[in-house]
Image (cartoon, rainbow, N blue to C red; front, side, top):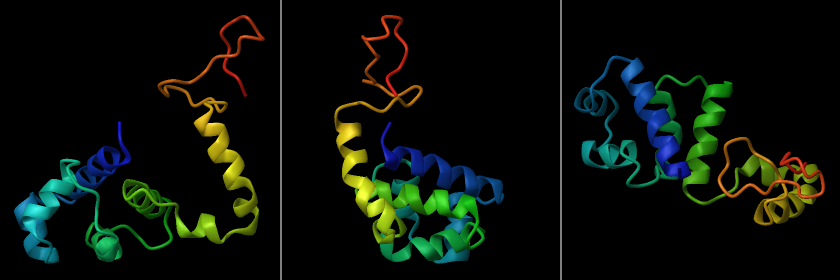
Length: 128
């Protein structure tokens, strides 16, 4: 499942929790119904230029974990790395190692496709 698809589900679920159909939400918030429909169906990533306004319209409180998750998914949908990660010196040092580990599937994520299992353990346990 792509980040765009995951973001789509989160965004649509949040809008529906507000009790708005797509048309009503777009009328209230000023978003283009056609584009928002594509975003909510996972056909296009959310534009970064309107992300903050979109989060506000969905009632996501600034600084909340829910909003941070929403924004992280949007950034990843656009094939970018969140700015706060890039700006953190500790993360800056670790990010290349994390990317290398992910590429080599040396990191175990439950449910992830293509995750390597440890052959050394011989019991199929995940590598850590």
